[in-house]
Each structure stands twice: as C-alpha cells, then as structure tokens.
Image (cartoon, rainbow, N blue to C red; front, side, top):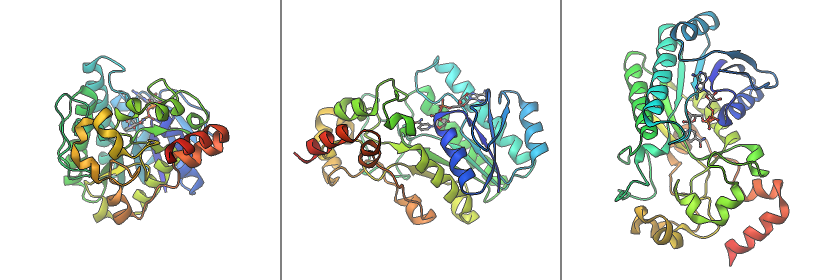
Length: 306
Ligand SMILES: NC(=O)c1ccc[n+]([C@@H]2O[C@H](COP(=O)([O-])OP(=O)(O)OC[C@H]3O[C@@H](n4cnc5c(N)ncnc54)[C@H](O)[C@@H]3O)[C@@H](O)[C@H]2O)c1
C-alpha cells in the first residue's frame, strides 16, 4: 500500500513510518520539517494549510492515511491552542482524504478521553475498555473526543474507511536507553516512582508496537475498523509492583475494581485489538530496559519480585 503518515517526524510517527516501510508499504511522511528518515519520502507541509494538504492527497492518491500530527502533550500549550490545533488538523486531513476517496484513514486519539486524573473521577469498571464512558477534563482530551466524532462523521459517508486508535504513553526506542520521555523524566524514573506512571494509570506502548498495530489495522476487513476505536498498549502495566497494591496510594480513581487486576496486568484492556485485528504487542518494559540497560533492569526486576 502507499500510506501517507502525518506527524512523521514525531515520537510515534518515526517508528510508524519505519515499521510500515519494513512491511513493504510505500510511505510518504508529512510534517512541518523532515526528520531524515531512511527510505521515507518526507514532505514538509503545515497541515493547517487546507489547500496544501488537499493538493498533497490529490497528487499522491494514497491507499491509506495515518493521521498522527498534532499537539501531543496535555497542557504543553495554551488550552485553546491545543483544542483548535488538534481539531483543525484532524478535520483538514480527514476531509482531504475523504475528498479523494482514500480507502483507509486512521486517526490518533488518546486514552485521556476517559478523563482520569480529574478530581473525583472514578473508573466505571476495571480494566478500562472501549465501552468505558468518555469524560474529557482538559482541552487535549476534548480535542481527541472531537477527533473521534470527526472519524465517525466521515465513516458515515465512507463506510469501512475511517477509524481511530488510542495509543497509550508512547515510548520511543531511544527513551528505553535513557532519553527523556514526553513528561521530561526518564522511563527508569517513571518506574521508580509510581506516582509518575499513575498519572497515565501505568499505561505505556513501545512506538514500534504502534507500527505493528497500524499495519494490522490497515490489513483488517473494512467492517471491523468502520468508525471503531481501539486501545493500543503494552500487555502489562508500567509498574514494578502489582497495580492492586498501588492503586489506593497513587491512583485512587481506579477504585476497588483495581483489586481484580492480577499482578502487573494492564489497567487498559487491549483485548479488542487482539480479538478483531489479531494484534498483540511484542515488547514490554522488562525486555526493552534489559536490552538498553541490563544492570538497571536486573535491579528493577528484583524489586518487582520482592
Ligand atoms: N505520545 C503519546 O504518548 C501519545 C499518547 C496518545 C496519543 N498520542 C497522539 O499520537 C500522535 C503523535 O504523538 P507523538 O508523541 O508522536 O507526538 P510528537 O509531538 O512527537 O509528534 C507530533 C508531530 O506532529 C507534527 N505537527 C504538529 N503540528 C503540525 C502541523 N501544523 N503541520 C504538520 N505537522 C505538524 C509535529 O511537528 C510533530 O512532529 C498525536 O496525535 C498524539 O496526540 C500520543
């Protein structure tokens, strides 16, 4: 397939482009500035420019568009700017794709649509799955709810073409090796202090596993992806102790339902992606930290057993 990936210079986009190219897709990466990606046709476009975006898709006529571009971290810009930027980019890209009849269009949403972290928030049920009600509590989460509705709107006129996913806290390959994550601290610091990972309810996702998800989504039957959303995360929690032991201290919103979680099983269910797309993540924090920093991981694995 020829696939246009927006946000190709970003944390998620770089790995998605590389993974799709490795699966023999022909990838066109779009961002404000190129990242120098091997084997990727990179185009510099500001996606707020409606005409430039429409021109790109009209000229390239891709089989698929994967829309990742946007402001990716809550409160990293003024609230209004996050809302306007993310919703405008998504509508611009999805409308341009619809106008030329692109067969598959996948947009990035976020688990934050559920609203965890807001005062008084309580999980309706644990593990959290795609049936859980949304309750956005900041402009970033609200922008993602609007993006999910934008996907459903286009899905009504182009059945089988549009869908979205909710990637968990994305960890890029260099972040396992100690580069700062999107919140400024390292993954090792996030593991050592459960309060840091509790902000995202211990969820995480290796960016390369996001690429295999996108590949599986592109290959799935139209009826399976039509207007649908998927949580996409690792198969365990980013925690060295069982979440059932941690939640009262650092994630009270999970409520007593968290007691049902076994060991470090994830708070967010990825069963829908496994069941409908046959997708499973291949990486977890133990394997990736061990590969990046064997001494550190031995200590963390020991502490997770004690
Ligand atoms: N990183 C995560 O943990 C996470 C979790 C859930 C959802 N998401 C979503 O996944 C997507 C990608 O996240 P990321 O972590 O790679 O973010 P990132 O900030 O690393 O990358 C986003 C990219 O979008 C590009 N971009 C922004 N505005 C643009 C514009 N006007 N025109 C062209 N390009 C523009 C940026 O230049 C950047 O390269 C985002 O939509 C984000 O909200 C990310």
